[in-house]
Image 1 (tube, one colour):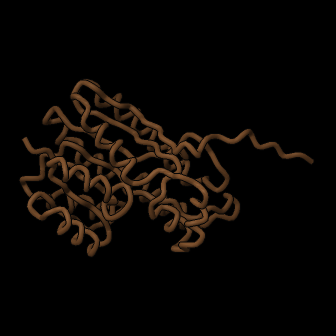
Image 2 (cartoon, rainbow, N blue to C red):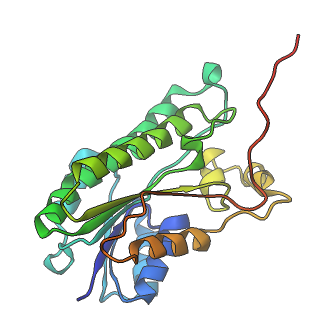
Image 3 (tube, rainbow, N blue to C red):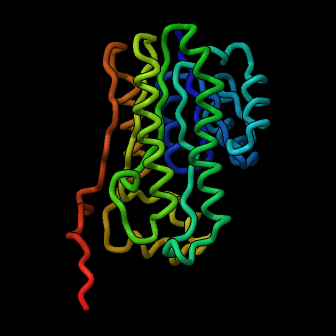
Length: 250
């Protein structure tokens, strides 16, 4: 039986890499994103027969409801929802951060995940199978200067994933939270408002994770036997670890 995965934020980074690896393994894809040109290019690249694309904003409840209602019949029995859409904006300390940036992160990283999960989950429960895979971050567990609202949204993803597991006990539906560390995608370009030089400086002299690294982890998680649930998986590149506690001295 052909399986179906819905991927949000499919036009770049982890989402695009996951689309490739799942397509290679015979999955049907529902690819979601805000950039129509990239979605169309991705559909042509992967083959149109097993791909449905949906251009909308996950942070807009009405748009999510319309998208779910319009999924073609052959794609409706969703096996995996990969809640990948998310972003970080800015790196200023809380006292000078842009409130609009905070709101955008909450709307996308939290509300978008809410909407997608709530609308697709009932079908999974009814079928007695399914898998919610959420894209968290090490920032949800380990604070860093300037991580304020972004880290808080990813802490939400972690706890929401845990609570989903409790609610879904006995249903056959699995839940996983993937928590990457330093990974080189468009993430920092978005965080710094398109400043490529500033984004490149984040990865200078490092050997970071790649989108393919994470896509392979997502696919491995999804490919475990039905009785196995990977609750959470934290992954960092070897070059990244934890700093000592910061101490301010007078």
